[in-house]
Image 1 (cartoon, rainbow, N blue to C red):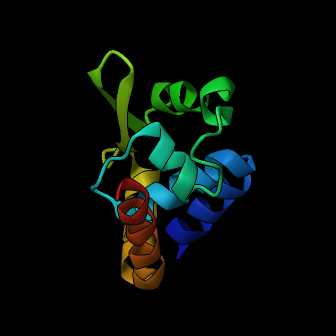
Image 2: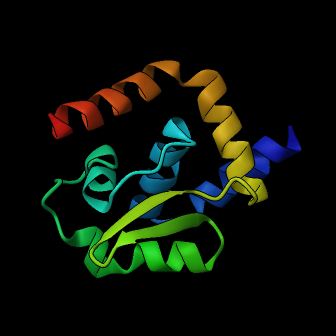
Length: 114
């Protein structure tokens, strides 16, 4: 129970954008997504540059929360770092209890790429 409390307090300390990114990625883990897809599943417009401009991806990556793989000079794939203990807990919680949300997020990604 302490792990859940620690996770809740960790998420509470994050701003809305960071929290949205972590929760969305935890639901679809181990899938990695592009920044536009991440914007979409985090509740922002796919065309929004907010995630780029905020440097949140870089900061979360530097903190060991995200894994970022550059597949081309202007295309990055982003996912949660499962080696981070807090992210392990979040992934487990979201995948064990959030099947409906996982399905909705994966459908959003699928529809956006069609």
